[in-house]
Image (cartoon, rainbow over all chains, first blue to last red; front, side, top):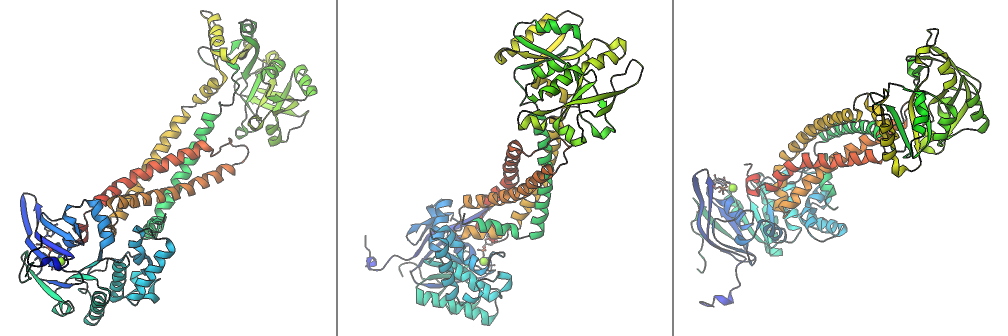
Length: 239
Length: 384
Ligand SMILES: Nc1ncnc2c1ncn2[C@@H]1O[C@H](COP(=O)(O)OP(=O)(O)OP(=O)(O)O)[C@@H](O)[C@H]1O
Ligand SMILES: [Mg+2]
């Protein structure tokens, strides 16, 4: 099966082949992604850029297993996630992916600590172990002194760091970030991006990050451009 | 149970709204508890009555007294051991609010068919031999502070004396007690000697016995005996209807309207109101949490897990409100003054509340829970 010595290269963590996504609205079928091919190796930090409405969020959601493609193959961390059912996909997400959103999306009534513990509720860990791991994740993002604070008692940057701790706590292979610094000022954005870079370099987390900000993209190892549902200058697989 | 704090925090999200919903639930279940306690009293009042006693009444209505001359004929029906007679006296003591029932009876016959009443021997003899004698239940005597020898004036709204007066005087010659807790609770009535009653009432009414209390030898044969008694008087001027004592009691209560039906109708209305109110709260609570529920799904909570979270939230809300309401209802029924009917939030009432909570939680929780379950993550996150 080995072609051109490809057997020596480990399979990419994310392998996208001919992925198409179309939305049907009434009688109209709107194709948002047109046959995307993309490989993301383990340990990569990819910035996904492109004009508004080009399909960045749609592609990111597909990689994170939040949605299923209309056509094409999508292999992430060894799993053909385009073939997984809703329930199996949920379990797969819990084990494999961490999500970071532009608007943080923390539970407003839960403390930082409880927010970070949320993904661990789906594991077999006991209460003590959950607390310990959440503490550790909060320490990693530099917020162990804010464990008891509610999101409303934290600044935007701090909330985003709690969200990063929540995404990290179950030790996922891949972090999915949709404009993580979109709501932050330059200085805070830089802090958050530095943190993401650290997670990538020190802890080997694969990161896919959508951003509009070229300065944010500079923190990534490479940038992929999407325009009107197609990749513009991404190196195709095998190049 | 590790999800409990998640469910709990959802309720704490809007403290005021949750508090008001809880208060409404509490008020509703207080009302439901009291209504059902009344219902239980009506339904349960006849349960304890002896299975070996039948009541023979006039076929037309139990308010139509049967003549005394029928008594030996009833007594001679095979399977009948003893027969007593009883006439509702309808007396008012002091003022209307002090209501308690009085029955005019043949003393020895009455005590023979009601072994549940305990009376000292000399008092029994006094009751039998005193024409204007009366015996009162211990709880009634306690309530009015009556002692042996006291004279109790009663104004009957049914029976006039030969002289046209409605005022009767009765001499307390005995105080009886119930054999067990159930009967001690019911020792709140008064028996009057038929001797003075029949002699003093207007001549046209003399010789009327009221209803007959028929004791049967074998409770298993009660139905056959009842049929035999009624057959005996078929086509006579005094046709009869004979039924188990418990049945008779229920029929007596039913003449005030079907109390059970009224209670259940009000309960239904209360339930419906609280259903609408809680249903609104729950759908509101879920609607404003759509993005949060979507995030839970992102993190790997399955659709089914989210469904159960919302259902658990509805259940917790309803159960807390119901518990508070039922505890209040118990406190209220426990603190009722003694001249109230003995209302109790018994097991039947608690079971009713329990079933109501489950039905309510399902009805108000299921629609938003299904909505949460069907929620598509990408749409919810994008605010679509
Ligand atoms: N559920 C949906 N139904 C219909 N159309 C959709 C749906 N989701 C996305 N779209 C359309 O798909 C296109 C791409 O949307 P997407 O959110 O991926 O863009 P984006 O690149 O992330 O844009 P932005 O930079 O503004 O976030 C848009 O035209 C959008 O209207
Ligand atoms: Mg987007």
